[in-house]
Length: 228
Image (cartoon, rainbow, N blue to C red; front, side, top):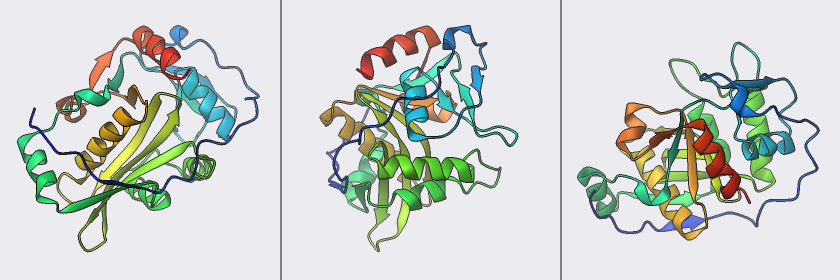
């Protein structure tokens, strides 16, 4: 892994997460789900419901027109903040200073960009509204990557619950911009008491960045410790 300098992250976060009312629903034990991980359906996308789902090891993933499907796949893909794999090319781009990075400067723009995909997207209008509300309440966050002309060229967004950051989606409009956003998340996590980054499903691309697939039982154990 190449050595890379610390990114200068311009933080625009306004305070910590606001208190939420109790969730009105009880989620089934994710360990009873099959490997695909569909654990429950129904409920709503209220902030307290989504946060309770993450605490229980679940996440919402719309499918066939239904927003409120709750999943806990086996295996689960996670990234430890200090294990992000920095290639020589990525380290060189960081050292060249072609980009600047911010936190929570343009959440709405990031989630909108993540939802634009030729192959279609699971980021439905209902999901967008739900995470915009979570962001306004201090629970959802975005990392933005800007070029030197001030254009948004990459980013990611997700939900933080205690020491868990659930990375929902990322995008790029410039080479390596989404990787720089992930690097920013990992560097910020190491200084902000985030011990576990959840990226949900393993892919060869994510594995090249240091993501590992772990058994659902191990994931649930780590989540229980992280969200305290």
